[in-house]
Amino acid sequence: MQKFFHILFFVFLLLLSNILFAQQYVTVAYDNSGADFPNPERGLYPYREAPLTLSYVQGLRAQNITTIWRLYNIGAYRNGPLSATFLQQVENDLNVAREGGAKLILRYRYTVSQTGEDAPLDTILMHIDQLAPVWQANYDVIDYIEAGFIGAWGEWYYSSNGLNNTNDRRTVLYAILDATPAERCVVIRTPGYKKRIYQTTVPLSPDEAFDGSNRARTGAHNDCFLASADDFGTYENIEADKTYLNLDNRYVPQGGETCNPSTFAHCTNALADMARMRWSGLNKDYHPTVLQRFTTEGCMEEIKRRLGYRFRLLNATLPDSLQPGSEFRLNFSLVNDGWASPFNPRLVEVMLRNVQDSTTYFLETGEDPRFWLGGDTVATEIIGGIPANLPAGRYEILLNLPDPMPQLKRRNVFAIRLANLNTWDETTGYNSLLHDLVVDPAAGGTPYTGSAFFNILDTTTGIEPRNRNVPDTHILEGNYPNPFNPSTTVRLNILPAYSIDPVELTIFDITGKRVKTLLDRTLAPGVHEIEWDGSNHSGSPVNSGVYILRLKSSSHFETLKIHLIR
Image (cartoon, rainbow, N blue to C red):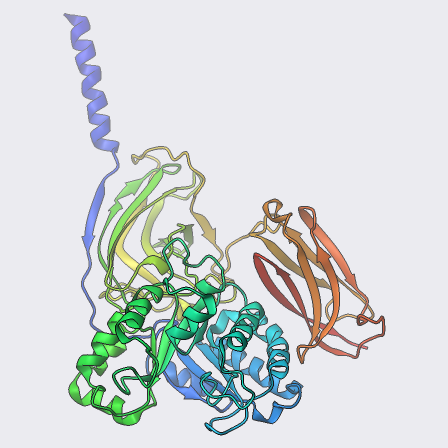
């Protein structure tokens, strides 16, 4: 009998310990915000033909505008190369956009007249080749590129050089796609153009989305939205083309503008077609009569809110307390009230921020918001590990959707804000989940056996520590010395999984002219150093100045500015 009571007492203690130390979870419901606020890569945008200024970009952000349609008129260069001054202006615009917290939609055109002259194909290809290093060095602030170049307004319909045919359109499109990193899209004027270029009427499937192929990187712009039943020839078969765009635009951008105050240009049609074709952006300046009609009829505020994505948290289930070394589990659901989803890469991180000293830890989740489609409700579970050495204390739990580009990743103006009340942290760009986690060695928790742990964030620089010996693909470590004379050494790092991937390392001058190819072959995994002696492909010394070093492979683009001083 005594033995029986000993066993019963032991079971009681075991049950008591489970009650005292088991993981406790709480479910938080979130309130909707109906406000209009800025979010990256979506919304109304202005068109701009003049050079950008910082005050202009910042003034737009005060109007909740984060994207600018930058139109370049290059008719002066239809018979020769782009000037160094022009290329520097393009780069200046991109630098100003970055500083001001905006991204650019780019278009280049030779004429704005139906009877005007565009450029011969070889000149267009030369201009694209010149622009390539600038695009590659600054694609972090390129929203997407409109194919442009051919015909009046760069819309591909007219052409004084006979380029308004499928083969030449394909050549120009592929040249632009080749000149830009795989993470960015190029958009074209009609769905019929895309069908003929890729010789298929089948829209992109989820398996094909974001696979880096040309087809998966080709989106749409409609520059005569609601101008007529077929949007002035945008649709060849109205129902079939709209159905195609409804499916294809799940994974590529759709933007454009109104162009004619027709009987179709009313709120009822605008809201229906923007939702169906998943619009992400709209020119806010043209056509003024149509845009004023949207305001008068009462749909402009809805358009402002629903262009692109609009993620709204519904609820989340979060842990109350955990001991170091245990499993962290978060479940949340959200709805996308927008008409589209992000089309450029976007991260999802969970942040733990100490309420006493603001020390912050981040967990990279692997979730991809590009698949959180307009109108969908998404349920997500995130599992990670609390580090064994995480200091005890109380931590805010936050959700962060940053831009993955290193120079933008910790800038609040490039992070996604959720459409909820009392969740947005303006200073950091994080979204509070309105719950704290207590980390305590005496708390409960399931031991974590995985590899996805929270890592500390260096909030003095905004950059998390990185093991430079383990690159994501290929990484340009830099060059030394820089500036240099007479030679410099370029250091790059190759990940083992990509050692079968040929690597091209090329020097360009600021006009985009190829100066010298330093490397064009496969490399063994590890760190490599390549010397450039300041000469061109003929062996002659080049002049002092800024040069662009480009690393290119089938899986990676990276550029670096280097300075030669004679």
